[in-house]
Image (cartoon, rainbow, N blue to C red):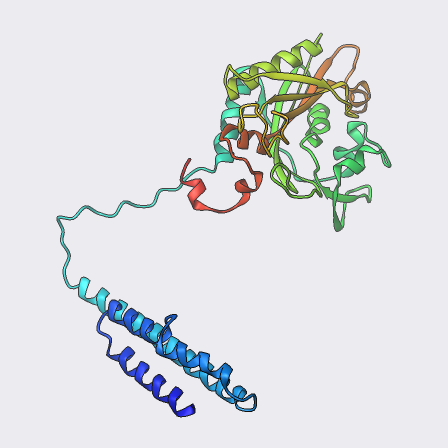
Length: 344
């Protein structure tokens, strides 16, 4: 049996080295390593041999197979180089040139630009802020003091050995609302500002949730602003973004930094309201949380709540992207697959 393996191996190597093109090489490979190849059939006979001789023959067979496969790979590379050398000897200048590969904007970039343009049309400016944030701006200035139960729902990611000036640990911001305090401390009302960016939470990853995702939040401060102004702004924006046929509904909800608070829902663009895995068979998708800025928040940032009123809101930007392009899984947005990017 040992001699048979050596004989088959030597025969295979001889034919591999003599192959003149890729097709001939593939034929040799199939002859010896195919499902019904000579070497493959010989391997099957090992199981029928006595137990005391199987280990030695098994090692010999593996070494022979590895040698054959390595020789095939080497010869394939040699044939490829020979073909390139032949082609490089002449060039047909009448053939059209190769079209250069053109880069594509990510769908997140497309959507963010479109949303910013819509809000700019109604008087909003754009701000940016840090993703590495202090507890003060991420929670306390939003009426979420220490040990408040709302902190549990945020599932905050704390950074080891990094602290702010007060000695509190720095965190990855859990929402874009960290910009509310920063803006209202520095900007004299009236003002209208949006602030898009990435946020982080310790969440189970599924089709509609992720541990890092995009939000677009904003606020408006002016005299005599009411909840009606907020509802009108939302409805205008959502119908501009998703189309005039989009249905919008609002549901009362509690957020520590607004009073009253609400959530906005739109009909699921993936299933057209029929129910799917993305909308959890409801036909509706939660798109934003909002409300009138809480008097405590205004007081903590030095804004006179008797003169100025405002509303704040936050959109799940990643979720809006999936709805806009009818993608049924948020994870597609962070998967570096060029087949997806080439569609935009």
